[in-house]
Image (tube, rainbow, N blue to C red; front, top):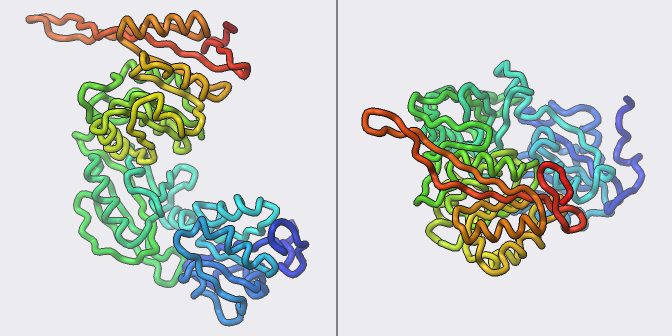
Length: 431
């Protein structure tokens, strides 16, 4: 493949005079750059980047130096517009398309408006130092994101690389691992990867006492669970004791069946109406990192509890809306799936959810009352779908023997909205 043209040779396309060069740079600075990357930086009339990155450039890069303001993302369109008639080069850490500025620039300019020159990422360097296969290593970034999201990735024997926000992140990670029953996990902090000041700090999460080091670091974690850690699987149906609740909880076996009917897929949005403890929305989010969910709960105390459960189970991105449905649904984005776990008899609730649901979306409603069951039976007759009764019994002591204790049966209606606003069952039958 021929090398990319120099900035001066490129045709003017997109909203700026020439495609923007996005140059990845590592802790090794200017010496670690390729000849093409150096040429792009020398010829740029405007150099945009963080202060640390700009300081790595020599005087021969004579373009005007512009530091990123905070917050960064809203400033991207403005800075590109201000310098649209000049040759622009943007500096990024490592690979610009891996949790970097390349994403925001691509969203603004499109791929044809960019020439990306990646440098090895900190993740590639870390795996090289550790001897870990990159494809078997999970990466979690805590840069600009809550540390609670790490909890969703904690499994016995799992290898994680955590991208740190700053020098305090290793201690935060150690505390989180310990609080979630993963105190025995080994940790290695890799600082200034690829640079002359590269260094390592090793330890165990539950005994971590190291002082903060360099702010440019990556944390390698080999997950080890303590003997009493609660086991959480990757599929729906987490243990009931994983949740803080006041009895308003979709129990484990019913929850697994409900998530199966909702069928979460990457990027989809769920409305969890009548959130209770938030278990349905939380396990929807745990299905894939790109899933989105809104839990609607009228009780403020329960709404706060949902937030705590979401943080503890590694999905702090769950949006909790406090208020009664259907009025609380008015300003929400159209969902790909709706779960109604309470308030079915509220006037207009089912109709509002059905109208908002995208074509191809799934609606699932559970109830234990005769009044709501009658309502679901009527909707099933009108729209079709699938109406089932779920019954679970648990073995309990009966004197010196063992017998079955039956939980209240749950009636569940599940239906898929067709493009013509009708419905079809999960079995694919037209109704």
